[in-house]
Image 1: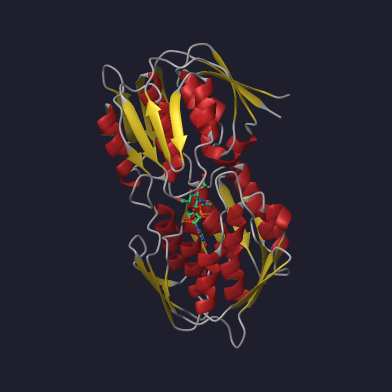
Image 2: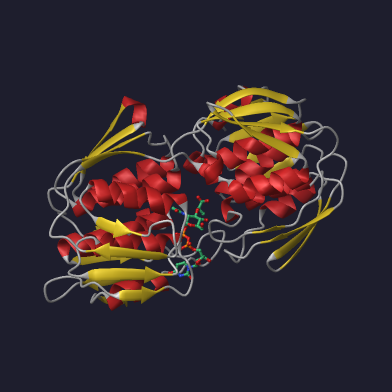
Length: 422
Ligand code: EPZ
């Protein structure tokens, strides 16, 4: 397995281009199942998760070609030849469950493996299945697979109240509702930018959707959808991740393509911690104000609150802040696995349930550490960039899921970082 070796270095300087959003692309790609016309995505990120989704959609009968080195994904599906999303694909990538809604809407049936748990939590699908059942689907769990059917002429519009603003369930129900008979209203819908991006792509395909970006989304079912070409929205999590490089190391970095509207609650916390963020005509310029980072408290919440996907990276910043910070993780039940690894580097962190208390220390020290999930991996790299000495991050395959060319991007701003294959 590959490892990444980072040696603490001084301030960083330069520009980083931010890619298209992994979590938008993973919802946009299954939309190709909703139409027999071609769907082309531009600004697609070059990530292993995108390759996994491509493999899954091809197994269902979609024709997919990745053009210009993967930045363009051209898809068309003249009719699913298979309706089974296999366990060995779904367990690798939970987002595979986003084929459930489109397959049900287009084909009236789907067999999708339950993803099973992952490092950060149990990841159930009850909100997805309850919503689809309200639309008339019958869903039965057999040997780890959800067997779903839309009997009697297909899905019907329904009023659906989400107990939690689930991103994936909002995406699945929104896609299913585009071809349902009648009107679907999702109350307590997720408001993430990736939801808005999916809705805008579906509208280009002919869907009638209103309210995306708010807690109430209304979808008027139509007979059929056409094709579209859509540019994937900028990845706000990659953006926030790289904004933390100058915050942690000192110096100044311009994140090209960054838009402040994607990271407002995150930027508020950076300001409180002593980091300046300036909008430029190319993106966002980030620099740490003089002196030490100040401790801040963070609570993760659904958008527009502080994103759970930036919690681990923010903890890496707060490890060397002046004072004590409290981080509350409210979205996932087990998303502090980066904490014991940061403690190996000299951080002073106590975790009790969903709360981590971080007492700032002067400086971290390099150490061999273990990446446990996608966002934990990159938080260890950020911490290592400002630590004393050498850090070896093991199991970096997690990184390839969500960060394209991370070594090249970080060494481009002055980090001393290399990837070695075992
Ligand atoms: C999406 O996951 C993202 N993944 C996650 O990013 C992100 O952390 C998460 O949204 C929250 O923002 C993709 O978009 C591919 P949820 P998703 O449904 O849709 C519970 C990353 O690092 N829940 O909003 O799975 C669930 O267990 C990944 O890029 C139910 O209980 O998130 C979790 O505790 C990690 N029942 C919470 O809701 C359900 O039916 C949030 O889940 C669905 C979810």
